[in-house]
Length: 440
Image (tube, rainbow, N blue to C red; front, top):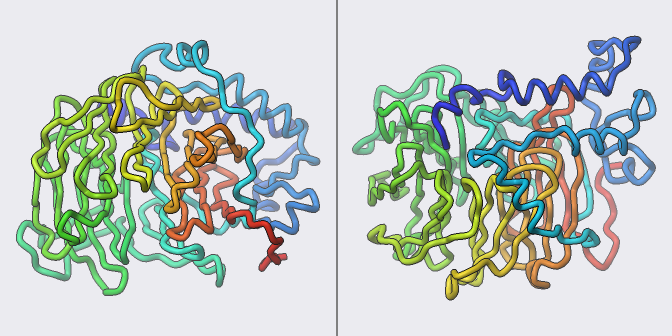
């Protein structure tokens, strides 16, 4: 990821491209007789349940019947006017000419609830891993300077950690900044096994155990200007201990243990690393970043064991299938590509998005589904068991801050950042039997 671009486009509310898009949204949405402030006052806090959606209510609570444009017309406008960000000019256009999109028709997850009480936000327009579900009812996300927890059972939103002021570790570990950090801007995060690891815009790392008060560890990975933390992942290492990996724009990947928070490995690459993901057996690491070629590396020594060649732009997402052989990469050329590590000569499938880069990828824990998120408006769910030939399309309006499947795959959560319609969408796994809605 280009650090200069990050400075110019780092805050979505100030990003000129996003501002233009939202201005277009508001121009099309509201005629001159509509008072936007009054409209927002009326719609603020309007949630939508599955029962209401079945009766015709928009899942985001957008009152199309009161607007001077239909949903279908605005969708066409968005598709025509949305500008995909590219580091390699016309990479998306080249894919459009070469690749056909998988036809829609899959129906794997049903809409369940949308809450406007939750307001996800985004720090950097290229980094979209800011929503994590730890159960089918519990979600952690970033909202401005705060780490928030949402319970879909109690409909309760609570603040877990406030990064806007001064934070300092309550535990003593070698390498931890005992003086703490101030006004940490969170660019990425991960939550697993009751631990949260958050990465910051200046290379900060903050670790917290959700079962204990205070902060376990905080540090600066680097003091270089090019320091933003692009991705973090929590995983079980070869010996069974809990570790996390941090990928930074300084071309470094750092591995820490989560018992004493010590730096275990440090690998450098020729380009900024935008994302890494550990294989299920913890032996192989996918590494993608500001280069057309991705890498498979030995997790113990950082040596390259394979190259991933085929994308036309820079990659920002990767994920492993539970089988340990298959993995996926997401790219600004608007594709998610599926690879078999036993034969990397070409991808086994190329999955094309509707209008933007692939910013986030998640495999279900049972390996049946692959969730692919574009930067805005669309999330795709592919049937991985059926060679990715069936696709469910989730269609909404707004920037996507992150997607997350619950560990049991029963729930899918989607964070939406928008000036008016920021919310958290919940979809539930479709079963053969009809379930009863908890919310009406």
